[in-house]
Image 1 (tube, rainbow, N blue to C red):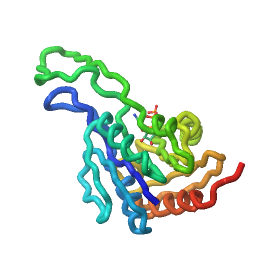
Image 2 (spheres, rainbow, N blue to C red):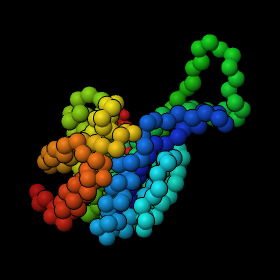
Image 3 (cartoon, helix red, strand yellow):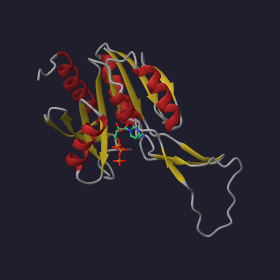
Length: 216
Ligand code: CTP
């Protein structure tokens, strides 16, 4: 299969020396890319700024902002059989980029933010027949309910629901637990394990489904 994977955070510039971002390390997306090439798939990885070495045989495209990621993903999505959006795309970016460094004057400083493009929702709208779309849901509460809503909202085939904000899993950790939820409501609980093993499990389940489509 031709698989497109996104990974890592995005960085949204405020001024020449500052940015908004999140704690994503990229480890989950990179582990998925590695698992996919090992199984013989053709993998393109669109990655935000991370300090990881890309797996061999993966075509790496490095981006910085949500807008840049959106641009590359849109271009590459056309020829992908399976797209996995593991990136933690920033939801907001600075409404205005300050050309000069913002000086330390005010005691309280407000910065106006505007929404970034929802890349995955866009892919859901233009999904080709036979193309599979997988999202991640990063939640701190109501994990399954919030994840299910995202399946509908973004027209996904699967969502990987995972908890963030806990020390033993998620974002920067080497380990994670997740619940895979399908569009048809199938739920597969994957317990806490290394991101490497978790990635192999996730990929196995999704690829199996790709070759055995559910007939409604
Ligand atoms: N996503 C995206 N573009 C965005 C924001 C998110 O493509 N601008 C994708 C992520 O890569 C992930 C999925 O949407 O696969 C869900 O991301 P998440 O952060 O859990 O949810 P949001 O849609 O951003 O909603 P909220 O932050 O309100 O939970």
